[in-house]
Image 1 (cartoon, rainbow, N blue to C red):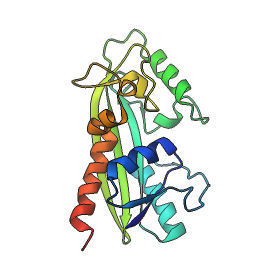
Image 2: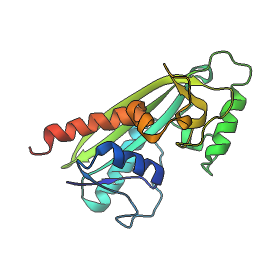
Image 3: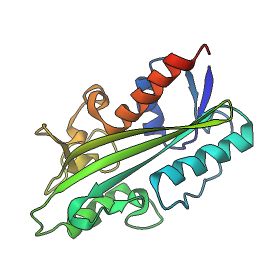
Image 4: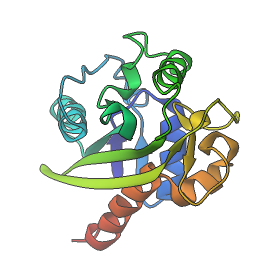
Length: 194
């Protein structure tokens, strides 16, 4: 089965292809020649994922899915949340986002945070949602070269290293995105022949 992933993020596409283990054929927006940016104007992760998936479904009429992820930090009342990708501005710079977040947390003892991923799948015209949550804490400084986004400053609960210090395999075993995509994968396994 061919399904379009409504994302321009090559890192994310690579991560998801490895998570879905060949169960379905995942095509990126580049693969289908869609290069426009989809504006994420929703006030929640669910709304943003739906906006992206609906845009691609209307454009192609094909099965597709989109995700949205946010980092929710306790001491910042859930920020950056839905604005995680653009936390430091519209340029969407991961480095700037990391610097701004560490700055905002200076002197704060409560470093608890969690990642939340929402996937919106449009399959045969019907909308389905899947969720993944990864609790943890924000470090004092960046550490690690793997991963992307906020990975260098996030230590998952029960671990002593950041997501950016883990291999892709280690990260995929526990990540918020992995949890959500495994839920979608199980949904495909149950429904692929129906």
